[in-house]
Image (cartoon, rainbow over all chains, first blue to last red; front, side, top):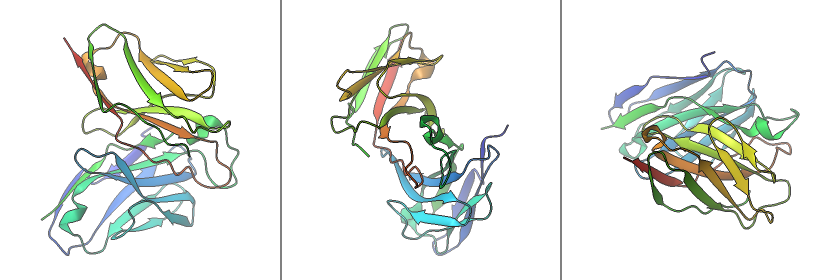
Length: 120
Length: 113
């Protein structure tokens, strides 16, 4: 099992360029998430998706769009990149989701290895 | 979700037990305590979780006080590879929405020779 796979691992953009970060999980999880992490700070939730076809804003959604393409894939798009979006981005998934039996282990998040984005 | 408070940093000698505290004084009766850690530049990794009974797995032990207002993650024999940021999170099983987990800044554990 690969778990959660993110691509690309590294990317350098110029201000104003667009790009999409891809995330896929093979654990049949219902919920997927995008976080960003800036130096010296904790993880901040950008967007999340409780099930295929649904997405919701997290703490810092401005400047981003997401698509839950199917149960496996959740992409994060930067339409016009800004230097403030320089960060490490983590995708995660969990079993818990809408209409799914919920036990304590269903809330456990599995994270990807991260995508380091630099916007010049 | 209940908020948590953790020390910013801690040191531990290799081979000794590392005891990482977490305060969650506003925890509700159905909320679990989850612990994750993040080794430098890697994605966070789940360690353990519990409700009110002490829990142990191959990675660590979790001790939750009787009033559930605080907990301690114990790494029984810390190694240099345990140097990481440790996050304590409190969360109830889902009640119909996604698990909108938020992470604080955690405790930076430095294991030294």
